[in-house]
Amino acid sequence: MTRGVWIPCLLTLMGALMAGCQGNDAGEPWVAYHQQLADDLSSPPVERSAVDNIGAFPEQRERLIPVEEIREGMLNIYALRECQITSLIAARNNQLGRVAPPSQHWLYERELWQRLDACLQSDVPDGLSPENRARLEQLAQLKTEQLPAVSWNALFDSEEWVKSFSRASSALDIRTPLPIDNPLAAIDYLQQMISTQFSHTWQQDSSELENHLKSLHQRPLTAEILRTLLLAAQRLNEASTYLTHQDPQAATCLSAWESAPLDQFEQDARTWLTAINQLITSQPIEPPDAARRYQARWLSLENDQAPWAQYQQARALHEATRDAHPQCEDN
Image 1 (cartoon, helix red, strand yellow):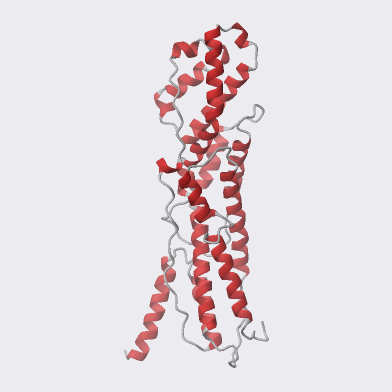
Image 2: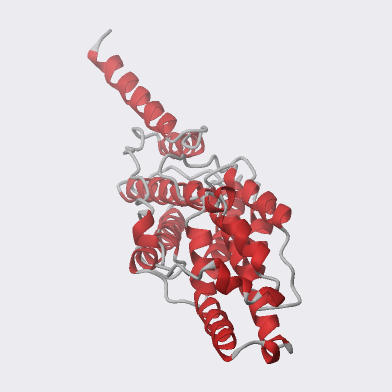
């Protein structure tokens, strides 16, 4: 094989390999678009490079909020038996209760707060000794203070939530519709649990919660969306750089850019990131520094360095760069 034939073949192979590294054919639409530009301008192929991965999700100890353990003896708890908490605490303290997932611990803590607060507002305290009444008031106050931290930890310690940000993920093929309805319903349910955590009227449902978490566990959706934004931004910037090195006065024109799949992905990405950010910021507690930094760097819709803004900037630049070149009349 001559050198003149070998080099283009090598470039084509390298482009295909980089497209394949994105997984799920995510790179194919961009390879096709770059080839369209090269064909329109009768120029060499667009140069592409590998796309960086997203940052690592904070380690467990960095993303959780310390919660003090309650060490009341069962005799003291039994003294508050009219508050209907003895069986609840006993179940929590048995072997199965201690290894329950964070979501079940969240439900336990919320129900415990409900019973303590309802008991405190009833006539039960009138029949307690001063010591036991003080114990009830102290326990209810402590659980009220702890519940927001417990809610935060239940979310940020759950396998389903952590998996959504996994670096062991791939970018998405923008030609394939993004199935976000069920995951969005899960986020909405979690949002409802947080906003009503101090409500006596809204009752949580264990099976419904677990089903929603299961839908989040099916795929690392947040990571996939972030990586797709990074891929799109880089491929658009590469296309823009390519066009800036072409003569807009040349006797060539650009054929139509089929951007509808990208438009739909952009809409879905905004919807998803908005829901994720709202779920995090609605928590009535100061988040750990590591979680706040991760949100600002990777999830934010405002930070210029976050994937969303990087994509928006790259798309605006590319559209302006395309507009500087003649458009084919049959577009």
